[in-house]
Length: 179
Ligand SMILES: Cc1cc2nc3c(=O)[nH]c(=O)nc-3n(C[C@H](O)[C@H](O)[C@H](O)COP(=O)(O)O)c2cc1C
Image (tube, rainbow, N blue to C red; front, side):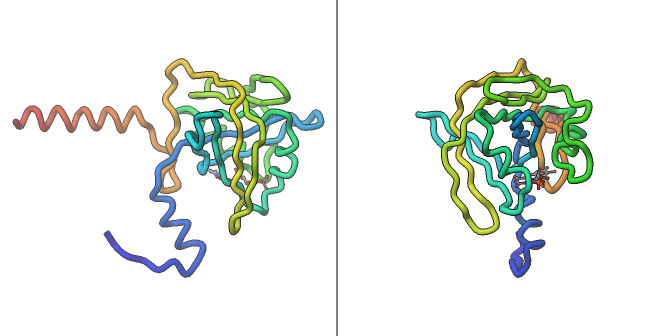
């Protein structure tokens, strides 16, 4: 464990990168055009009754002011193998939806095919907090995946839960063999 100062945004970003998370794609058709972004600040379990989820969006986002107008926002929990999809949906220069395999939900929600889980959400509340806006979404419909492993993001890189699990079971086997 090492202490560090948090004098700059780069330092705090580097420290926060040590927190592992899933990767969510938030997307919808708004006025006939697809808009979306990806988020590792996305989290579930903010409320169970009603079911609510949360993510935090940079106040400088050019996408959120449009996406927030959608009747329904599709949230796709990206799966193992979606690394390129993630980078495309976060790109500032490329068409975020070109060639992307998308399913349409209700109210314009756009859902990434083969995701680990889909949620169709409506906007509940927003709270400006520092550089970001906390966004609470109410979950209107849930589609649980058919066992696809979720993509994991940690220290600015993608991780593979299956590899972590197999390394873990190799570790357990070694411990059991040594016992
Ligand atoms: C792995 C990853 C995670 C991201 N997580 C967030 C996030 O939680 N919140 C956010 O505002 N932007 C996040 N971004 C950036 C957005 O996806 C998007 O690139 C950014 O909002 C700039 O585009 P915009 O101006 O169109 O919104 C992330 C990007 C990547 C690659």
